[in-house]
Each structure stands twice: as C-alpha cells, then as structure tokens.
Amino acid sequence: MPTLFLPIILSVIGASTIIAFFSFIADFVTPFLRPSQIYHFLHSAPGPSPSSPPLQAWALVTGTTAGIGLQLCHQLASLGFNVVLHGRNPSKLEQVQKSLSAKFPTRQFRTLIIDATSAPSAPDSFKDIVARLSDIHLTVLINNAGGIPSGLPASDQHHSAPYTPLSELSHSMIAATISLNLTFPVMLTSALLPILSHRNNGPALVVTVGSFADNGLPLLQVYAGAKAGLCKAMEAVGGELNIPPPPPNLVPSLGERKKEVLIHHMRIGNVTGVSHSQKPPSAFRPDATTAAKAIIARVGCGKTVISPHWGMALQSIFSDWAPWWVKQHVFGNVMAELRNEVLLAKKSG
Ligand SMILES: NC(=O)c1ccc[n+]([C@@H]2O[C@H](COP(=O)([O-])OP(=O)(O)OC[C@H]3O[C@@H](n4cnc5c(N)ncnc54)[C@H](OP(=O)(O)O)[C@@H]3O)[C@@H](O)[C@H]2O)c1
Image (cartoon, rainbow, N blue to C red; front, side, top):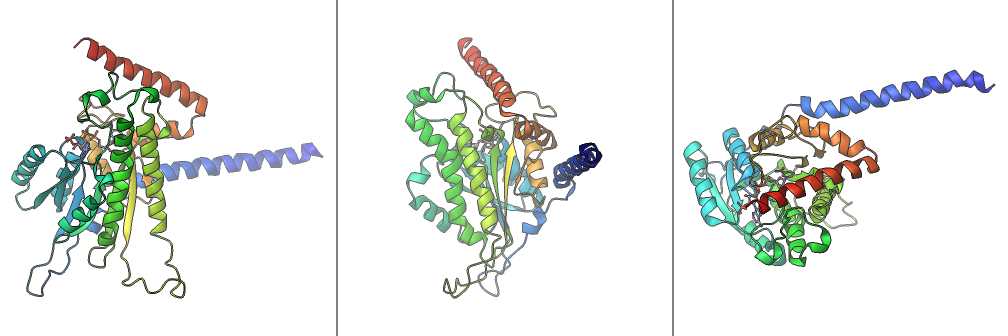
C-alpha cells in the first residue's frame, strides 16, 4: 500500500517545488520589469488664489550633501521636481544648492538645516519643519540621511569606528545612531504624512533608505537594529495606509478624504562614491549615481520593501535565505576583515 502512494507523494512534492521555484523567480524579477511610477507624483496643485499659477511638485530629500542623497537630488531635478535639500552643514548645503541651480536653472531648490541626531529630542523641530514647508506643494519625501553618526565629540568616536563592539560604544553614540537611522525618519514621516495625504498633495510618495545591515551584521549592531526597526515600521505604515478607515459610528468624521501615499523601504547593500567609500564600482557595489537611479526606477514596483538594484537583490537572496549558521560565519568573517582594514589604515596614518 505505501508503495502505491509513493509516486503520488513524490509528484505532489515535485509539482509544489516547481510552483514554488517559479513563483520565487516571478516575485524576484517582476519589480525590475515594471516601469517607474515616479511621474505619478509629478503633479501640480491649484495656487493659493484663482489668479495665481499652479503650484509645482516638490520633493524633500534628507542627507543631500553627499553620496546617494546628493545623487537622488540630481535625478529628481532632472525628472522635473523642485527639491528641498536637507542637511546639517549650512556651507555644504549652500554649495550643493548652487551647483544644482546651475545645472537645472528651471528648477527651484531650497535648504532645510536640521541635525537628525538631535532633532528627535526637540519635538518642536518637526513642527518647525512643517511650518517651513507649508507654502510648497510637497509630493515626495525621501528619508535618506543615515549611517554611522559622525561629528560627535572625539570621546564618542571609537578607534575601530564604524566597526565597534557594543561594549565599547558610548551611550551617546548608541543614542545618536538610533536617532539618525530610526527616530528621525519615523518622526519626520509622521510629521509630514498629514501634508502628503492632503487632498491637494496626493498621490504622494515616501521612501526610506535602509540597509542589508538589518540582517544583524556583527560590529554594526545598533545601526543594524535601527535599520531593521525602520524597515518594519515602514512596512507597517504601508499596510496601515491601505486598510479601510474605522466606521463613522466608532470614530466621528475624520474630515476630508485622504489621498493615496505610496510607501517604499529600499534596502541597499554596499555603495561606493559615498563619504565613507571611494572604492571602484562593480556589479555588486554600484556607485551612488547608479544606486540613486535604481531607487527612482523601483518606485511603484509593487513591493513596499525592495532591494532596488539587481546586484543588491541577488545578494539579498543569500542574506534572506541562507541558514543562520552560514550567515553568521560569512558575516562574521566579512565584518572582521572590514574592521581590520580600518585599524590598519589608522595605524599606517
Ligand atoms: N553607502 C553604503 O554602502 C550604504 C549601504 C547601506 C545603506 N546605506 C544608507 O544609505 C543612506 C545614504 O548613505 P550614503 O552612503 O550616501 O552616506 P553619505 O555619503 O555619508 O551621506 C550621508 C548624508 O547624510 C547626512 N547626514 C549624516 N548625518 C546627519 C545628521 N546627523 N543630520 C543631518 N544630516 C546628516 C550627511 O551630511 P554631512 O555631509 O553633513 O555628513 C550626508 O549628506 C543612509 O541611510 C545609509 O544608511 C548606505
């Protein structure tokens, strides 16, 4: 009797394996085949009075003085957006504003100076941001600022930074890392969502820039945790914007109907041409321009959380699917090597 069922059981297992394999391939490939929906967010709104011209679309990008954030500004301006350039260093921001204005004379640029590590402990800073953006037609927010905090007092910067064991991290470095990579983008998104979902602004787009470090990379533990938290928070926000509102008998009128806000969390791997790396680019280590183009290209790809560049997406298969003991071994060796490179570079001056 058992031998009678064996071919059936094997056929079911075989068919399920083939279906699972092709669904996996389709799930992997489809986001890369869909054209970007970024133009969906390049719309205008009526001016403040009937005689005033329509308001053009603006994007706010955080962390625009270097790396991926700077390249995102170039991409958005070339697509037709005016851009609010966020950063913490006024003179760097002024330089960026000048060079973007020279390259894109028909676009407008304005700066927003705020330190992402300290803003979350001064909640009025977000009210201030909202007030400063109240006169523009904001349709896109890109939360890009992030990384291992720099510019802290020397006592907080460890000699093997950024690859420092938890026991050797100062508490102010831990707090700054969480503020920069989790609290600031979440608070900024929460402050701006009412504007983005307002009937005049929608449809709107919110993108957060995450990291493969969220896999729990050793020696980047707090950064990894903050990016993992950001990934899950944005996934949840994407979900809550899609669920039906409570019935009117439970919550009195919520006022105006909200417009659609699309949420994406872009998980990225190693990128070069950024402030901490000028290594030559490769298929698995794109430069900041390629990474920025990939982020824009994946807008509207159908997934909230996505690795935007195909080389990164291939790497994420390993980090998402390998058994934990393989990951622990591989990640441990890679991170120890990176730490040793930093220590060697510091030793040799
Ligand atoms: N590059 C990679 O390999 C990689 C990998 C995974 C994830 N990511 C993520 O990608 C995003 C961009 O990284 P990137 O490599 O392009 O970094 P980057 O070249 O170091 O640029 C970071 C930008 O954020 C700004 N910034 C840093 N701390 C800030 C603060 N406290 N307040 C306000 N602005 C601040 C920087 O301003 P200053 O010029 O004033 O420092 C700069 O404009 C980050 O979220 C990072 O976590 C990068």
